[in-house]
Length: 135
Image (cartoon, rainbow, N blue to C red):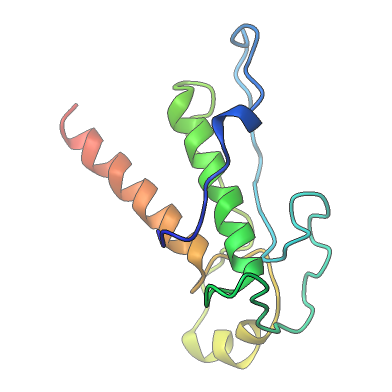
């Protein structure tokens, strides 16, 4: 993960008063690659991708926001074992590179393909796979 991306602070996460007695089921989870994503999911879905770098760090602000959201989800899962055991990340379907490059690469979307968030998810899943080998 690039050092310029700052994961959410622990103080921003709401602690659970007591653990739930029943499992929590997330049917799907997604975060838009847009700075409005935390409050307006899907706000610019399918709109044209225009690189925006207000902070001048060379990274797209929308992709940084999306990556921060996914990093927060991974942190919450890791910091609260058993609260969420896995997740289905929406809008990550299998396609040919040709179709992706002809269509999706030009649009804002919920997908993580080729974005900063993809590295976060890959890293998290790799660490889970590695830790399961030692179990």
